[in-house]
Length: 172
Image 1 (cartoon, helix red, strand yellow):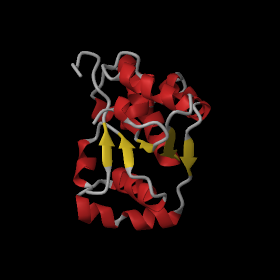
Image 2: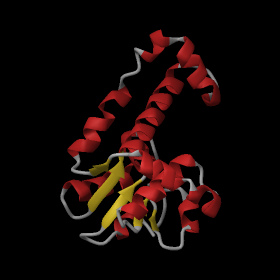
Image 3: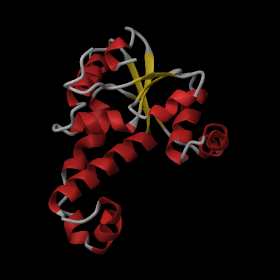
Image 4: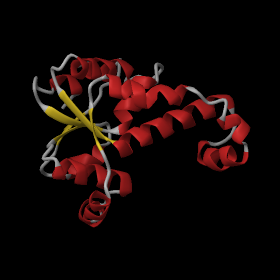
């Protein structure tokens, strides 16, 4: 299912990739994500995310900005940036992300240690990596059954309904 198919009034968890596409103007998923987040801002849909997701989205946008100005493999960027803090100081696009997300009226769930501990079971049950396992635990704890994400790994969870962004050139 697609983001525009989320019913009015539905409570939906927003994954990091939706924010990354929204803040990446050149993304082929930008319009779909922008329209979806506008529905949240207009109180048509109740958007929920976690502090961990906001940090992940902010980090990914920071890495994207860095990769646009440094000619280095993406996998080597974190190590390079740790050694070149002068470049990190020049990266500014990601700084607005947490405030912009807050201004959309999205509920942000804090991460506490019991959520992290409880998320471990989803690694062996569904083969999830740490961030996705934590997202699933937050959703379970808060009884959220819909997720906005382009991460198809969430299709493995039988009690979840996955809503994906669609590309500007996709035919609906």
